[in-house]
Image 1 (cartoon, protein in one colour):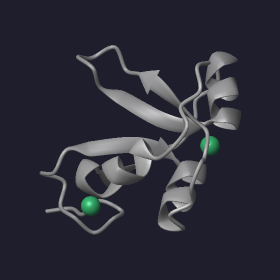
Image 2: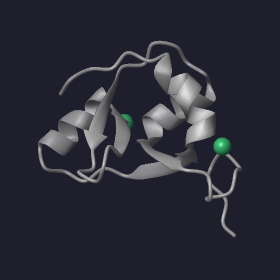
Image 3: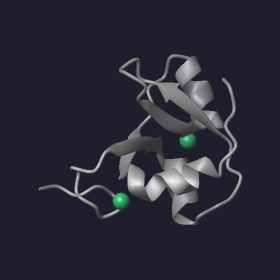
Length: 84
Ligand SMILES: [Zn+2]
Ligand SMILES: [Zn+2]
């Protein structure tokens, strides 16, 4: 069984986010602006920083990493959400 970056197994529901937000989450940084990228599947979304959001808007693909919801949700809820 493979592990997510946070060390939990992948049976936990995963959130995908860009490496900048991942490192912010690891530092438990407060007030990191992020975008929600809707995947178009149910209400699933990926998270990325402002720079990556702009790149996605410009048609670029960004690299996303997975960590589990349990680890990320408390952090995500503290962040400012920006609308693309
Ligand atoms: Zn980013
Ligand atoms: Zn986890």
